[in-house]
Length: 196
Image (tube, rainbow, N blue to C red):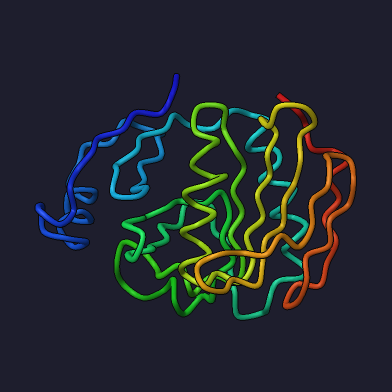
């Protein structure tokens, strides 16, 4: 099953608030991930087992190293209004007091790191649209785990957002360790990351 999209024109349909209202009100297929990517409502099927397994390993690796006031969230709605985006990263490390507040999403800028694991049906969203969106929002670190890249599966770590773009801090193939800088200052072991 591939991702489905429903296009809206935010300016004519109530701007950012209208787009979010439509997102909040829509009927969602059970288990599917519904995001807004560059003003387009996207519905993706639930992730497959290897995807969830990688998310669990990364969650475990970040747990001991995350700042004490932060939680690690798997279904957190993260907003990037300047890019007409409302994403649901595979993992996001965000201060608990931000998440505890009422509402259906948190500002992306509140995240310390976001992690996306590509799916076959919508990998380009993670590689391009979300990369640009997280950078524009000023998210300090973006970890892109890409089992679906042609050739060897890779892990890219982006950071130091400036002017809406990231600097590539590190890229490794599955099986190689990758260092996550402060505030984490930890190394993730990718040797057990399965490939599709």
